[in-house]
Image 1 (tube, rainbow, N blue to C red):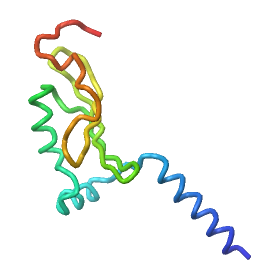
Image 2: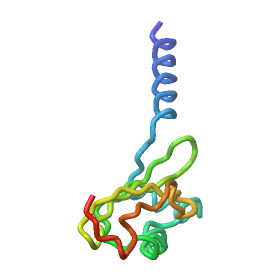
Image 3: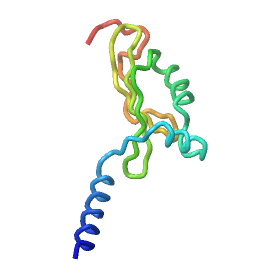
Image 4: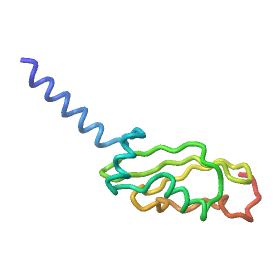
Amino acid sequence: MFRPLLLCCGLLVSLTAAANPIELHHYQAKQLVAAGQILSLETTLAGLRELCPGELLDARLYSENDRWRYDLQFALQHGQIIRLSLDASTGHPQTDIPQECDLDETATR
């Protein structure tokens, strides 16, 4: 009697989780790096710092639609705080690098 209801609820939870990004934990990220599915955060940051020097404030790894992404929060040398999303398997930004990353940029936004 309760089995169909539980199955239905379990399916609903699965569908909801698939539609929304899922944040992964540190141990899960280490497993993905070891399996070669994503780049380590250190490797990703090394490439990013060439494009946008700054200090990492926060990093999170998400899975969405079978794709991995790092969402980062950076404090730039000029004091601005920006958010970036990077493809965790390639390290490439998923959007344009903000103008504030330009070393000659001095305007506060």
